[in-house]
Length: 581
Image (cartoon, rainbow, N blue to C red; front, side):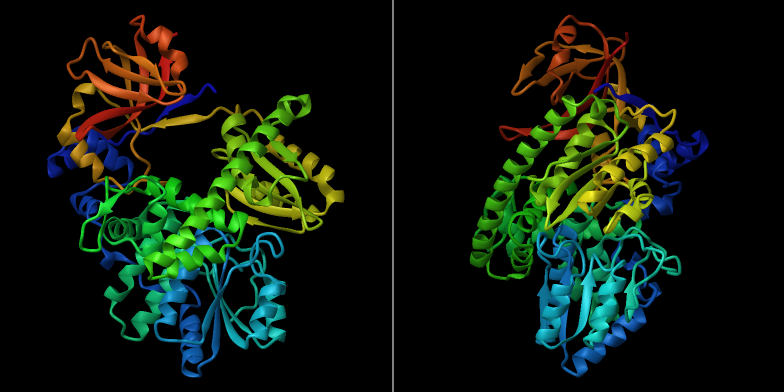
């Protein structure tokens, strides 16, 4: 698909120049910092050297004092506590975190993950009944519950209190829970609004530790779970999330918990045991590795079998037990891949065979036999393929259930909200949402949603946008440049890996098509010193015929390290290629 290249707003020259002098770096790197809101030496120190001391006081969060007071009461009176969470990565990692922390000094505690198929997303009646039957007096809900007014009211009739720890957007009315921790509450003064569900869980245990004189150092071992949630839930890696992610990654790279070590054995990054009980990776793991190696496997348990297995994996301290659970979860992931590949292929075929679907501004597609556990993945793949707001629907327990994914600058949550009178349930955020509706409302929903999308995207051409940070001559790229660039990590939303553009490069010889339509290149700028640079362009083999004819072309790319046969060199990872005409 043709992409539009857009150059981001550049920093003010005087600010960029002053910062470059203060830090002793070139103007290109300085400009990247200014684009990220780093304008002074002090701000640069904070950016490059995150500190756990800069985390906010958890008691600034609305209702935190009530939540901690109720947990203290439950522990003092030896009440049964149930830690309840969603079945995805964010929910299961949050449950593992809070359960492990509380279980270290309170034995009357259990955890609960709802079944995706029989209970669905969020708080369920079945879960509350389980709590009642087992004598639970307090439920701590993580990564869900912000819209569970009826379920919380039902729990009250059973004598069960709720503490809700959520990060999703609230509805017009909050549940009548004992405490609701959600920075997106309009009345919550907490200064950072983009925490993950597991991040809220961490603030809860931070507050408990602070109140009960537990050293903060005792909490650091939970940051691996927090960074997994941050990476997998695609929340902003800015502010407090950046600090949590930075230290969580350090922990995973140095001392991964048994469950993560077991999962990583299936990801070809674990080298060997060093003889001292410490595992060794063949390279430093990044947020991207967590997104593609850890997140899908943890999610697969809830998609195919049970999210409880993910929690068991994350809380065990026994590597042998972890290896057994990880083997089952990896099998779930293989099955998930096969199911989502088949459903994606069928969906693309359905769209291409239907003129109305092909010409629509949105994609709303339904198949009763698609596996509920993969429709979110299918929605993401269709969004990448057709680049428009997308909802994929299937039949589950008599209701039509769907996952929605969006494109840049379109709030799909608001579009789904505009159809709320046709829905049984819905929730989510700007770029992703979940929903369910009765079969008799399907046709009306499809028509209404398409109409809303047409209205809100009127006059807007849906073309994928490639946001380029700066124009960069190849001559600026060297080991010192990359040494500073690496310190911009961890990368993710709000701090994406810088994307550079260089115009008028040519083939320096040896370029070829490799693998499944990938380009292996060697590029040079004929008029500016620098290079040649090796480069890889995945899925762009169609450009080879023009490139080998020495026709100049423009590239946008990331700069990265490539290790081959024990040698490490800088490489350009080309994301798109354009020719002058």
